[in-house]
Image (cartoon, rainbow, N blue to C red; front, side):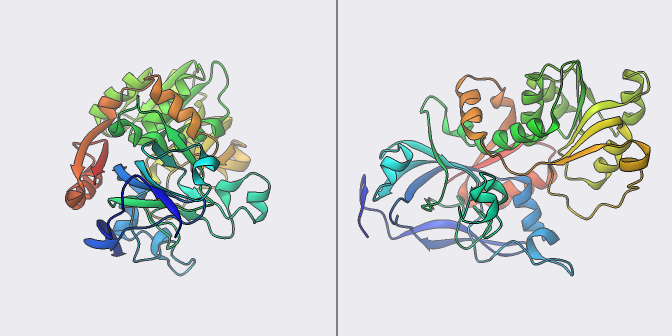
Length: 366
């Protein structure tokens, strides 16, 4: 292949390889080479997402059930939250993306086909034909490896070197959080509830704060995370394990309920909670990859409250905003990115994310 590199690429690398639920192995893997308009980076940091955990644990979305085919295509290298140093550029890649050897770079988590109805209309994050998200599909191996390749259809961005790599790994979660908040259409003086103060929920709190709601409430079962939520901009933190949060939010709103509720816990109970907590004619945003199907009384949505329900998926058009916010230091990242582990300690990292007691964002350093 014809490409430029800052030094010859090695033939093999260390990579975490998903072979099936709870079957992830550290293996030797071939180092990718770039084709035309493709980029190869030396991975500097890769986050472990809640969706990575759910894939690891065998959630039906990734492995299938009676109603759907599984999304994950093993063997595959996981990891869709990452930042890397450009070490090789295929023909035309530098000009296309404004990248040079040695730059820090990131790629949006989905590599669109650019041919389906949604891609042609600019709604690339809902790509129908492939929906190739890094870390789950054969075409888009992820970043839990020493090197990774950005395919020619990818959306790539230069990351300012002023952003430390241990913080730049948060660009992807923050972009998703910004998109979810945009979907909520928050108005001045709204009462907004963000359910879940994990990495994504904390980004949502920071984004929602900039919408100037009258009251911004964070919900989480972990009091330490609620403290970080306050540093991100929440006015109040409530622990559903200690208080009746539905009753508390109603008391704070003269009995009406919140104007906007964003679900970022991934727990079915948070869906039911939000439907009861949101006022009539209010807005409910569902972001999470839920661990299991949710059953609820749909009458609440229709006849009882006439709610507006939005879904939120990925972080379209939000990566430049997320990069700008990190460059300007808008979030307390030292409190959000709690653990950096070597790639060989991937299992320890997965277990940390599963526990959620001592960590918020866990990242690996290949």
